[in-house]
Length: 72
Image (cartoon, rainbow, N blue to C red):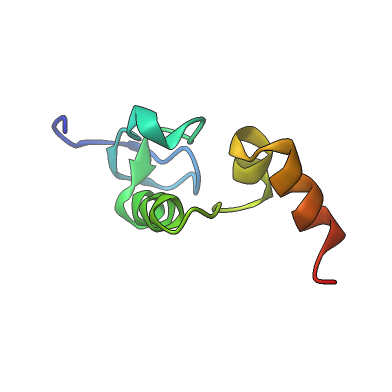
């Protein structure tokens, strides 16, 4: 992991210490503050998505269809 720097978080827009998103997270916004980095880390560990935009960029077509249909 690279050294943290202070910059604007790509997700929340706050100026904080940020870290790059790992490549294995797919099309995750980067750089991320600690809070948002943790959201992505937990979502990836649980095989879920942070929000609609994350799902749209990273989910399969079948996963998106299932999410849009909602609970049956």
